[in-house]
Length: 322
Image (tube, rainbow, N blue to C red; front, side):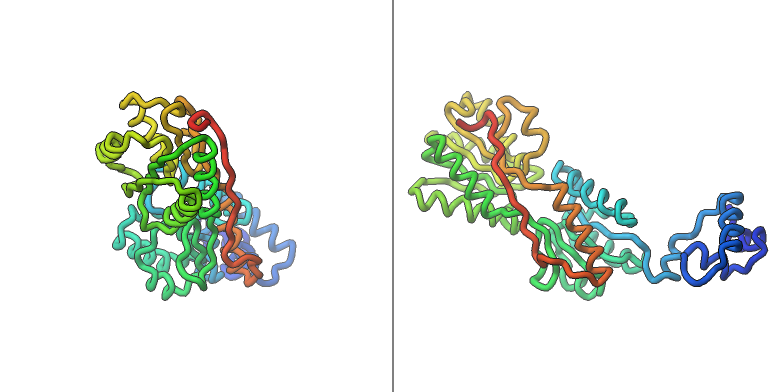
């Protein structure tokens, strides 16, 4: 592979001149610039991005921490982040923490080594102190890491309120709330809004916490069997809503005739099951786009507008409710 020295020799200029052309820093007259660019093209020279980042003090590379790749939510979120990154001249380094504190810590260390410009935290941060001490600009998405760190979330409390109102308006009078997992701020906020409406309307409910990716199907089945009066289910994710519908169908309970279901997220799979699932839509791609845009504003010392941005949600009515 050609080196920067090869380019300098072919263009009959100094290595420093080639560096100024590549990095677009410092004065180079137009004739010399053309000579260098032609030499780069003829030699098929590919600049060393790590060296350039050290020279410029900016790598144009953003680290993105996610807890897993197993749900459509993160696929859409990453797509939104990458769309904005490409548009604004950045690349992303995607890191799957597997919701593991050590893996997360290792990735934060790698970000420091690779001169990353900033971090988008979309995972359940286990190393908050280390993230803050990294001195890298940070934006969180779907989480709030700290009051002094910008965040992008959706209006989860409103989403819970809308879900409860929909089930009650359809005639539900005893409701199962499936949360997964409840230690997440997003889940607890959805639950808060949901329960608020149930209490106001004197609607009894039973709640069950489970894992998002590997829910305990047998336990959910036992709860439904133990409470035959359940005629409505609110799941804090569409993934759980789909599982609930499958369980009901195996138990001979008809949706929505016997039990109505409302999920959360509006992932594509809600339209691929029968009946299709009513859900609360949050703008997942837009959350990712806005997270990247906000981080770039931080890097450029531009005002953010809303320090903690909360995006609207809306009800998508389908076949699982009346």
